[in-house]
Length: 111
Image (cartoon, rainbow, N blue to C red):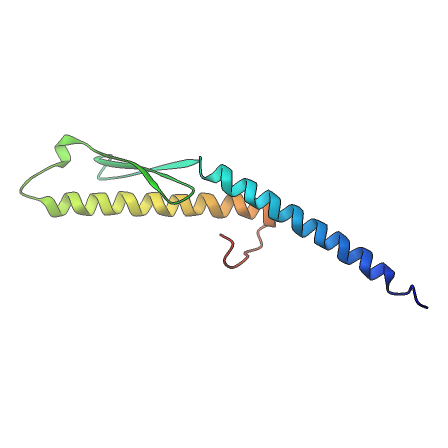
C-alpha cells in the first residue's frame, strides 16, 4: 500500500519534463523570431516597412513621389498604415510559430 501513489509521481515527472522541453523550445523559437521579418506597404508601395518578430520596425522606405509638402497628412497616414500592417503581420507570424509548439493552445502572456 505504501507504493500505491508512485505511478502518479512518474506521470508528474514526465509532465514536468515535457513542460521544461516546451519552455526550452519556446525560448528557442522566440530567439529565431527575432531574426524573422515581414514586409508591409501602403499607398500601392509608396511606403514600405520591414518589422521583425520582436515588433521592431527595422526599415521604413518612402518613395519620393509620396512626399507632397502640401499634403503631409497623407504621408503620415500612409506611414501609419504601413507600420500598423507590418506590426499586424509580425504578430500573426509570432502567433503562428508559437502555435506550432503549443498545438494551437493559446497561453496568456506567452505570446
